[in-house]
Amino acid sequence: MSEEIDVALLARYQPLNALNPENLQEILKQLKLEKLTAGTTLFKKGDSEAVQYYLAKGEVDLIGDSGILKTIKSGTTDGFNAIAHILPRTITAIAKTDCTIFKIDGNLIDVMLTWDQTGNYQVTEFGVGSGDGDDDWMSRILQTEAFHRIPPANIQAIFMRMESVPVKAGEKIVDQGEDGDYFYIIKKGRALVTRSMPDQPKGIKLAELKDGDTFGEEALISSAKRNATITMLTEGLLSRLSKKDFLELLNEPLLNWVDYEEGQKLVEDGAQWLDVRLPAEHQANAIKDDSHIPLIFLRMKMDSLDNSKHYVVYCDTGRRSSAASYLLNERGFTTCILKDGISAAPEDRRTAG
Image 1 (cartoon, rainbow, N blue to C red):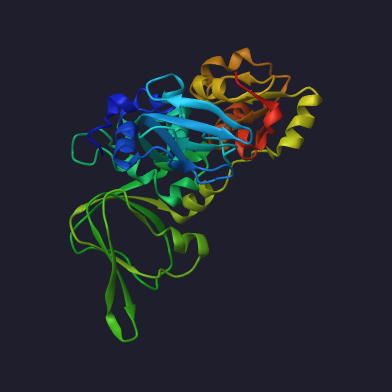
Image 2 (image 1 turned 30 degrees about the vertical axis):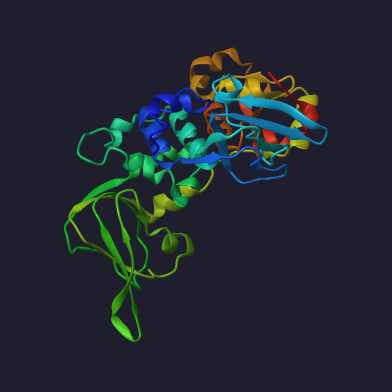
């Protein structure tokens, strides 16, 4: 966290202003603040690193093949948007003046937006905001690779099927060499990871786990034996998901994915592009002649859609559009999802909304 950036300031940036307070607080903890001198390159054309750049102070030039395309100034409408966030980058960004910028993991933002906007849960239902010291455990697990692999359409089912397990200090949760039976999340407490070796049968310490950490998924995915022992260092509370549920929920629901050419052919045959991103995202960059309903409003506005049409749904990455496609399919619509989101569309097929 930085003294120069607070939640109130973050909430002025698009699309961060659509996040709930718990997730905004977590973003504040995870962002990286940097002070750049004039002439410093933020990123180059062709860069595909999933990082979003935001301008806190100063000016940044966006440079194309023919020279400077635009200058972004802090405090302006453009300045409160992520800088040229579509991947791979189509332009180069260079600090025009001394600048302060902050960087955020783009996948983390996208997952948080998807979770918030599906509207399938309230954070208080799962212990967040309970005042018992584990207020942000859910936000922390959003950063784990295991949860990035869970299809958004399955998010609600994950928490509905999880079982809470109180544990005591010294209790062995996973034993090396056993078959995997559960995937675990530490809601509260600390645990020790050890592995026994031929020359050290009592085990060597590999790591310590804390609130929000997960373990056990490797053995479930690979069907291999547990490769380490996990023992609680303190009393605490775990959530666990059975192997059957874990493997089932890792699998994508029956959704139809298309590349841009396939999607455009469907549109030429009468289908409709449907952008489910936030209004500011749509305004900044959209596919020409699309329709637009933000995911957060989809249930409310679904009746405005023509259920005789085929909808090609898109967002930035496919996360929000897959959640939207699932919701629409449940209501009898025919949908497919654009692979890789708007970045799959050629530049000449995109327009500022």
